[in-house]
Length: 284
Image 1 (cartoon, helix red, strand yellow):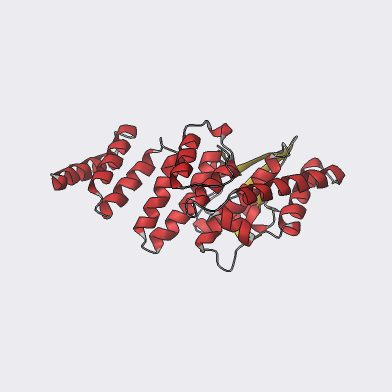
Image 2 (cartoon, rainbow, N blue to C red; image 1 turned 90 degrees about the vertical axis):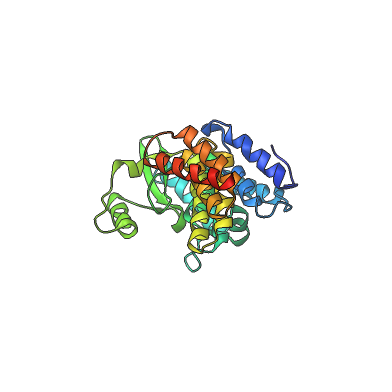
């Protein structure tokens, strides 16, 4: 669905449910991030944000046609740096990192700054518009990208103008984020799909609401994540726990029932089953 105006929350939710039924490879990463962002401002026109993404893609194509580098990979990275971070002025928000606007793609475009994953989505969208090979990585705590051109690969940081990170840099970053005992593992280089990138974006916002003890807003973020990932059992569990905390008994029961349908065994399933029994007793 591609409309110039996000006409209301119901339309947005309907479009996001369609994303939830799509294979991962068919998900339009930036468009879906815009739809998620618009949930906060459902009457705000989306077309100018789409136009901005189109302009960045066009400018990247124009510059790439005129550029040469020591390698194809280096040319691509340099062109993206020049367009996104120099011409359009994007940067990681180091001063107000925890500002919720940094995870809303519409506000990131307005303010030209954001979280690593939000900036990463802009980079991915711009690069893929050229047919370039780029993927997000499952690196913990800080979203990174991997570019590939032929036999060349590079891991880069979208928060820091696509600075290349070698293995030593990644080890150092991991220890800062996860503690001095943390060790770099192959799974940290594993590519993640479009849906996982979007969930990571929303999860950043959810965690900020939880830290500030705003369970209602955290629940809204979980429910937005369920629109695009309805088969993720853990999200149904989170929704159930938050609904229970807010005394939304019927909604909590429905969410926990969904969780148990998707994950019927294990310690979390046992805990959910006990909570479900208590909630049903309270409702009766």
